[in-house]
Image (cartoon, rainbow, N blue to C red; front, side):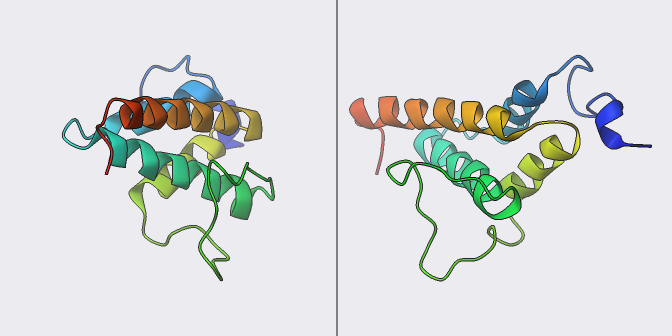
Length: 115
């Protein structure tokens, strides 16, 4: 059975692709390091877009490390984004989630909560 025809196994069954990605991100939320949390998820979403889906992302939002050819290995957030993709999240859903994380990180930066 194609997993995209089954309900998303994490969170409410009526999640769409974007909501699935954001649900996964909220599960890993770190209230003591919100800027780091947002940047980690921003990078993970971008890496899945670039390396797994062959999409591009704006370089001012994310730029892979020199010589990097695949997402960060053994990363909970990369695995969670991939799980959401398996259950139907597409590139547009990932871009939308990435934009939310980017705006959140910028807001924290403007508030002096970055490092």
